[in-house]
Length: 119
Ligand SMILES: [Zn+2]
Image (cartoon, rainbow, N blue to C red):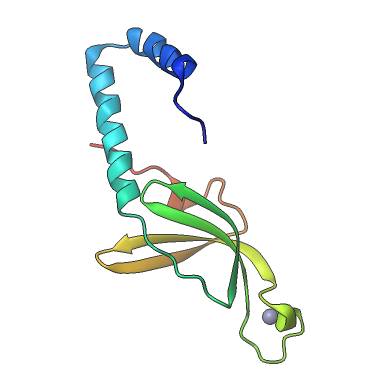
C-alpha cells in the first residue's frame, strides 16, 4: 500500500493544478463513490471447501481466486483439500445478503468487471 507522503502530495498538486475546477469536483465525486462502495463490500466467511489464493477489491465487489473442492466423496484430487481450479469468484452484497458469481480462470476482460457507466 502506497502511503501519502510529501512527494505524493506534490505530484497530486501538480496534476490538480492542470485540471479545471469541474474536473476536480468530478474526481471528488468519483472518490466518494469508491469509498461508499468500499463500505458496502461483503464479509466472506472462510469455508473448508475453498482455499483463497488471491483477493482483489474492485468497486463494490471482492474478487477471490479460489481452489475448490468438487464434493465428490471418491475424488482423489480433493483428498488433501480443495484442488480444482483455481477459479475467480466475485462477491457482493444485495441488501444484507452476500451474493457470488463464478467468473472463470481469468479476471482480465471479464464482463462482471466492466465499470458501470456513471450518470
Ligand atoms: Zn475433487
